[in-house]
Length: 263
Image 1 (cartoon, rainbow, N blue to C red):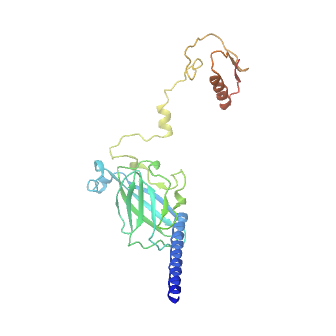
Image 2: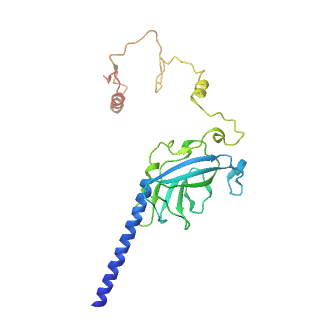
Image 3: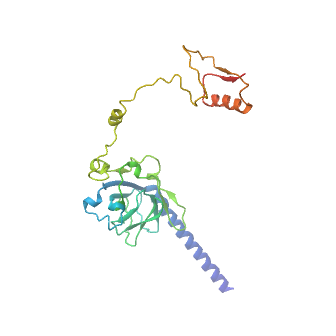
């Protein structure tokens, strides 16, 4: 009886320990998701011209870029290293200049950032820079994708608030000057409102009064103008009931001010 009691007590203690550990892990995941501010800064898109051995990193065309990912802890200190951040990168990440973190490609553009055994934790208010080398180049804000989440064994994954939303301009910087070129000799013109206006300066207005969408099988263009403010009355005989219903419902869906009826 005493042995059974001891076994039961041990099981309860173990279960209590598991529950406590799971709760602690979940708290870490929640804290990182809520308080970790993530930003990206493009350092160069011409890695091979600035001393990076892109070819040795197996970058296609020996072309690579360098980016700094900054993690800022806006909450309480985090000491645990039992977590991972899953984020998107359209460029394959080839190298990480940090002994505290490693990045692994999972599939497609999904990458995994996780701390190593040398991770020193996040102090409250601390910012940690992770500089990495990626393949090709990153020329536009939209090359950086929003949406990332924190996960850990035994905890529910949580989305990172700072990257939650379609507007990437708030967490991407450095895209200016020579960094907007794929190579130093890139002669592509960066589009602006002025260049778009100039490119479309030869666009002229065309007479579309006789154009209909979808195009009818046959049209006969007359002279003068027709007042259609009273709506359309179409001969019913050419239409099947389903076609008639589709025509009238489509006019209603498009909120046409002109009634369309088949009679």
